[in-house]
Amino acid sequence: MGDINSETDVFGLNKAPINLGNGFRGRLDQFNMGHGVDFEFHVYDKNMKEVGIFGSEGFMNKHGIAGADVDVPKSVQQRLKGMSVDQLRKGGRLGAKGTENIKGDKWKRPRLQGCN
Amino acid sequence: MKIIEHETVMDVSNYSKYLESIKEHIPIDAYNFASETGHYDFYSKNCTHDLQLEKIEVSYSLENRLQYLLYLKGNEFKHDKDLKIEYIEVQSFKINCKNDNLNEDVLYKDDIKIDEVSLDKSSNLICHEIQFHNYEILILCKDLIHEWI
Image (tube, rainbow over the protein chains, first blue to last red):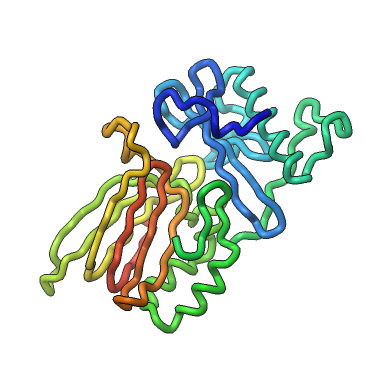
């Protein structure tokens, strides 16, 4: 996969340059945590309402909003998982393709800690 | 930004050292904001990352000094509260657009990538630089006071 940030941004919005399909868009934010780079994808619906934040543990659980309850199509969820797996492999937190079982939730990794 | 990297990967690894180096030269309120626990922990409810600009108020203080109030709305998936920042004795307040292709209606509906408090040595004032995805706000002032509301 190429640089996901370079995909066409039909709305001219740096805020959500990634086309996730089904009208959903996203943005990748990356942070140097000192001992590695962590990431999160902000996910927006077709009305540009943010519907969740997806990271190395899947959708974040905040304010009582269960991550599993975030309502996005399965194809969007799969795309987010695919891009997250790429990020985890790039950062060495997940082995190269074919070396680790990433089925279901097995791809998930704890967030990196360390920044103030 | 002077110290913090933000173009691709946000990197604050050199900032705490810089902040300590200017600690004696900036007001305690500004230092407290910049050094607040969680300010740069991107999963913390006290981080400025992902706050959204809600309102800017400009007024004169009782001492007839120009002051700016910035209201930043918390992200529902991250923050418990909104953030209010009061800028004292503002010398300049600039908003620069970074994306010429944007519809003005959506330009300011944007989230903070990262911010940095630094010392402007030429004026001896504080520079608060806030990077959003589509624009940036640069404030030169004497002090800033923050409050989670």
